[in-house]
Each structure stands twice: as structure tokens, then as C-alpha cells.
Length: 138
Image (cartoon, rainbow, N blue to C red; front, side):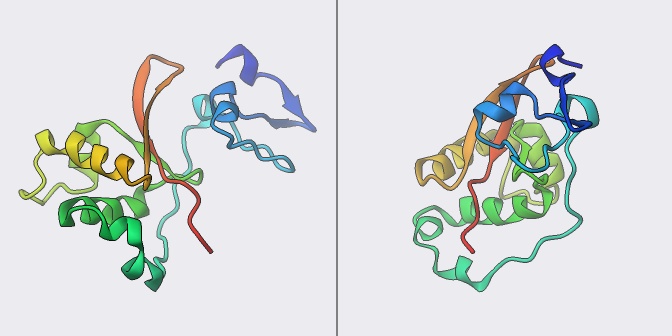
């Protein structure tokens, strides 16, 4: 566990500094640090019909839009998923030959260009790539 993650407020563990840098600080109920408990993932998510008329999503290729939508059920509670190409390919689109492992970086770059996702490298127990979905409109 990180030294900065050992501190607590009212007996609840705080987010690690990396999560604070991303602005994912929960003011009233701090979430546990990812380096301690691991990410918590929802079992399922509902997708609004507004996604059909999203201008940014319409501005990407069909493969990019498909990958974007397929990732949604796999997001953790902070709207993140592993950004490792092999993990995305193996978990999100394992049965799709149309989206080979080599194409994942280009597809993610396309989604980044439209500001649909943020693809970054996180450093805490080594370096790992992550994909962050910005807040969904309500």
C-alpha cells in the first residue's frame, strides 16, 4: 500500500494521490484507494437513447463507436477500464475478428481525438495504461 494511501478521514481510506490528480476526489465519502482494494465494477449499465444522436460518437468510425459502447459495461465505478490493448481485446471484444489486437491503439487514439475517452498511463505498482470515460451527460 502507498504511504499516502494509509491516511484516513473519519475511518474511511482516502483516494491515492493519482486519483486526486485526476479529480476523482469524493468530498463526502472518500472511495478506497485502488492499490488496496482494486477497482469496483458495476454488474451492468443502462445506455441512454441519446447515444444515438451524440455528435462526437458520430464523428468516429463504426469500429471506434462499437468499441466505445462495448467498454461501458466493463467500467469501474470511477468510469475507468484497463487501457492495455491485450486486456481490451480479450475482455471487451474477444469474439470480434474485425477488431484485432493491433488496431486497438489506433481506435483508442480516434476516441481520444473526439474527447470521448482519456487514454493515459498510471504509475503506482509499475506502469499500466488506463482508459477514463468523462462524466456521462444526465
